[in-house]
Structure formats: C-alpha cells, structure tokens
Length: 173
Image 1 (cartoon, one colour):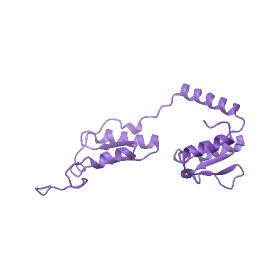
Image 2 (cartoon, helix red, strand yellow; image 1 turned 60 degrees about the horizontal axis):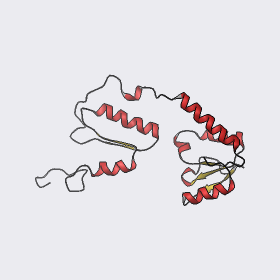
Image 3 (cartoon, helix red, strand yellow; image 1 turned 135 degrees about the horizontal axis):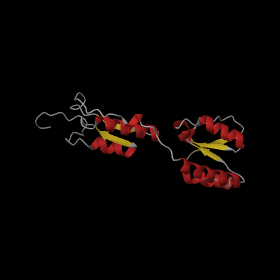
Image 4 (cartoon, one colour; image 1 turned 180 degrees about the vertical axis):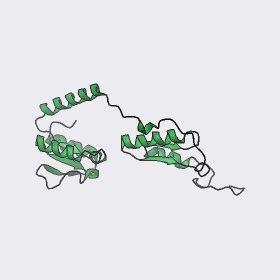
C-alpha cells in the first residue's frame, strides 16, 4: 500500500483473505483460483452449487484471469452423480412406515422444494395423501395458497412453529 500497490479486495489493510473468510460463512463452497488448479476448482465449486442448491464463491484474482490453465482430461462436472439405491430404499421404507403410522400428519414445506425443482412432486403428494400443508415464510409460493389443504404460512421462532404444529399433528419428522 505504501508503495502504490492496488488494494482491491482488501479492507485497506493489504490482507487479501478478508472477503474469502466472509464468503466462507455464507456459501457452501469457495475457491481462490490459481492457473494450476482453476479447472478442478471451478468444477468442484460448481458441483457443490448444483448439488446443494446453495451459493458459492469463486475468487478470480486480477493477476490470474488471463493466465493459461492446466486443462484436465475430464472435468468433474461431466462425471455422473451416483446415488446409493440401498440407502435410498431404506430411507423410503422408514418414511413410509412413519407416514402410515401417523394419525394427524401435517406437511411443513420450505424453499428447498423450489430449489430442488420438487413443487410438482409436493403437489402430487399432498393431493394423494390428503394431508394438510403449511409453509415457512421463505417457502411462500411453493404451494397454492387457495388449495383446500393449505393451512397457512408459519413465521417467527422455529421452536414456536414446531410447538404449534405438534399440538395439531402426530408426525413432524
């Protein structure tokens, strides 16, 4: 700073990791690109974004953006995402067992339904089961509010939400 160097992406103190540290708190993945690992890191971070449906941060320093990179043979994003069928089947059997034993279940949905493109599945589930449904405030709009099974939007303290719901139903898993 004293010798006229740029202090872009600092807080004026010459430390370049402040913003990376801040992004670490609000993103699912972060990277500070170098020419040596740019391809792998971009693919890793974008895959995390895709899988988690959450924000990521890719820092591209000004002295790196126009450098040649080491290109890998097969970018990570082209590799298929594998599911564990045995684990999925166990989870489904457990969920079905819980649902079948419930006497007054309520569906509580939130924004993840939209992020994972599952609104139509949620709608079909509500229609087929006849269960009442509520959303949290960030999930407003994921289910038609004029639908006869829609019982409202819960806001405020999450403990209060679950206490309120638990008085009305016997399944909150």
